[in-house]
Amino acid sequence: MSQYKFDCDAYLQRIKYKGKIIPDLKHLKNLHHAHLHTIPFENFDILSGKGINLESEALFNKLVHNKRGGYCFEVNGLFLEALKNFGFEARPLLGRVHITGTPTGRGHQITLVTLQEKKWIVDVGFGGSTPRTPIQLELDKPFTQNGQRIRLIETQEFGFMLQSQNNDQWQNLYSFDLEYVCLGDIQPGNHFASTHHDSFFTYARVAALPVYNGVFTLYNNALTSVIDGKEKNQELADGQPYIDALKTRFGIESDELCKIF
Image 1: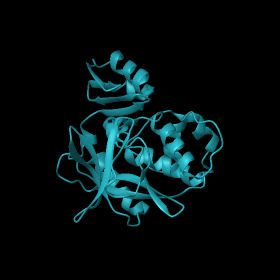
Image 2: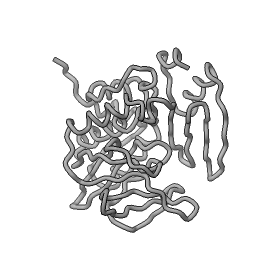
Image 3: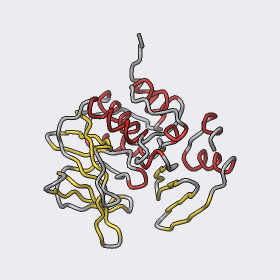
């Protein structure tokens, strides 16, 4: 039987966080910032055919010990476990992605944190559009964080909707409600997102990692950086140039990935 136990010190070392953790808003924001800026969003195990294992020990080994990233069910799953171990009142939620205009099924995992009877939405796994800070569950109160302007509204069909502003237009990112979510809800969403041919993650290479003044994103061979509001695009060749970019821009090193790139 596995003797796995969440290693708080190893996790904090992985996200380059120093200091004591107190379950309050300040430390929630600090943990979110550190996790988001060190553990990349990526889906390479899906494309390699390895699959996604959401068991706690497997997530910890992959994202912490092996210094890999993952997609929403992985990075938000690990962050949820970290928050619980540091004493936060936290539980998972599931959302529908609306970026294309057609809502998906409940295939995006986020976290609900309650602090002094106030509720916060916490997400470290939505690619380049990941919120840069926890979002208080308040409606129609836009705010800007690190150049990203976002807000929550309420819809009749889908519950709460997270939106981002682009060129004076509000774009729907994902919707969610506050219903209880258990592992039996999460597993089907993860299975569909990681295996079904209609899932974006099964046919496109993607990665994202925010930096202090911008973000790096990868879509197949197109590497995009947005630094201080200035966008730069680069087409990566497969092989060593691709592998080098994964290391330098996203901090990803893996002998297994070398075989598929």
